[in-house]
Image (cartoon, rainbow, N blue to C red; front, side, top):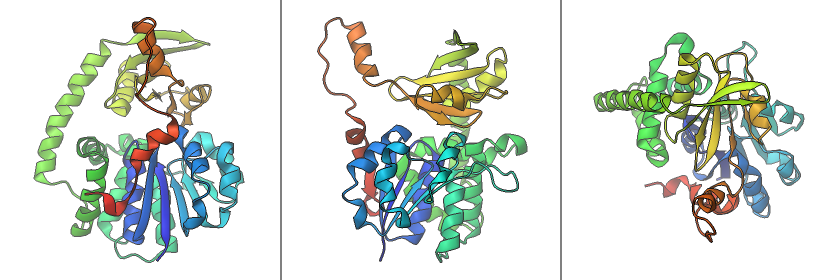
Length: 327
């Protein structure tokens, strides 16, 4: 029985759905849920243990040159599957595949790349179910915003349920539910929850629309809002409702900055200036080191600050588990 390590993005459906897919194929599966800026630290801190795994996957994330030397030692058993436009240059390494769209021009995501890889290399009745294929396509449509072209609102609903369910329950619930469905569908209870959630999102948008900061920087004119919830929804809606801005930056004060545009402005290039990356119309970067500590010191003069978020590797430890540990 192969021992498998999966490193994937912890932020959304595209990062968590590979956990569901991998659980159909591998019994001994260890998962590390990470943010992009945590990946290199995690790899390098775990370098002495990587030899203990038979297969290592990285999905919806891409290492940088900081951890390539560590990974190259295990190149024959590592597969990186990412879709972020800003990481295309990493295709120069044999164990990394960054594909933002396929040969037909269809946008890809971490989930679809992993799904196709698993179906090609492993036999699994669970993966072959129509419900799993449909579920995977909803994740792709949501993550790439292709749902806007087809008005596929089920993709948006799936994103809302991820927020409502949380990471662990999302994995547990859909791992079992998909196997009981012939075709993917929401339950009556879920539809009711989603109606309530839609009302909450609209109220949140209205509140944040009154809190826009107008920013001009290096030839860019953009709006800034502070928000911890519904950031993709907010970014898209604000861009549509306020075309006077080149793009919007949504700051989660405790975590990161997300950028959204619907025009020609490549926000991945803007994010790259601050150590981030992403796609042309959707990107992000982490907040500066010690940012929260500095805010506390700014408010409370001469304060001595301890605790809070530790260094990147320590912070990520609570998101490391075996799928059998999820209750």
